[in-house]
Length: 307
Image 1 (tube, rainbow, N blue to C red):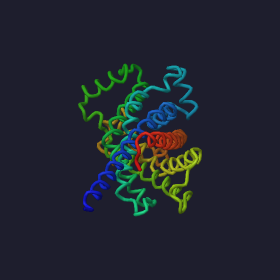
Image 2 (image 1 turned 90 degrees about the horizontal axis):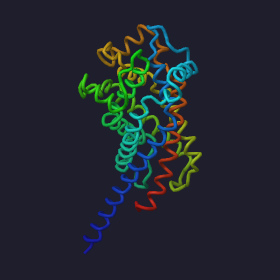
Image 3 (image 1 turned 45 degrees about the vertical axis):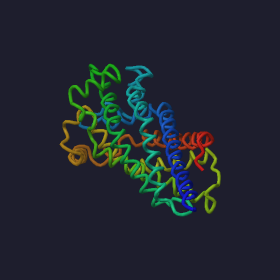
Image 4 (image 1 turned 30 degrees about the vertical axis):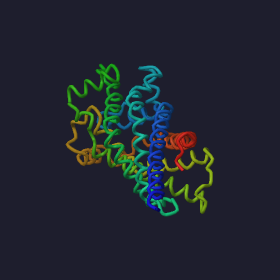
């Protein structure tokens, strides 16, 4: 006699979890798409500075000079070269990130539904690896090639679809998966650090009351802190990834070979090229994404009940 109510309860729990993951995926996708449109110029400048090798001599004297040369040569729209590849990729990237995090965290929460910081680290690592493999690596490869192509005397990519078609025609599908190892290491560490810090700060703020409401501005502040921590923690991996995905990637035999050559020819400082624009971009990125994500979740939860 108790079997039917138990099955009904179990079915409702499973449905609630599926609805929760669905809401998370949709919210993450919307947050990612809006965020990249706001912060892309900082991503463009960061990528250009990382591609500007010391061996060549440097084309740019710094952030301001990079912006000035780009605007003088290509207009303000030049700061948005490669945006399309990130817009097309940022929506599924954020959707995969938050969806996988939600899925894994549902398995790892304690009996009170709380997720401690160590488990948050593991969930973030899983989310980062998943987004790297399924979305980030091909998206970032196309973006870096587009940005690098703009510095050529005769740019060969006319637009997103033309660029992707040319990359695949010349290099095959593997041409969109350059630097996979570096990307997995970067994204895995990125999200592990961010979700660890975010989970720690949330748990500290909420204390013994998991239902305590958080002001969006506070969410943004916590997100900015988490973003800054990830920048200082893994910028060397980001530099290696960028070099492995540029038009000169053929110079490197592997991720390790790339790291060794950067150290040999440019010194340890080269591993932190683009740190300042990346810091500005990532702090805005993580803050905006978490604010939009949580606000959209609140709205969608009123439509799809997850309790």
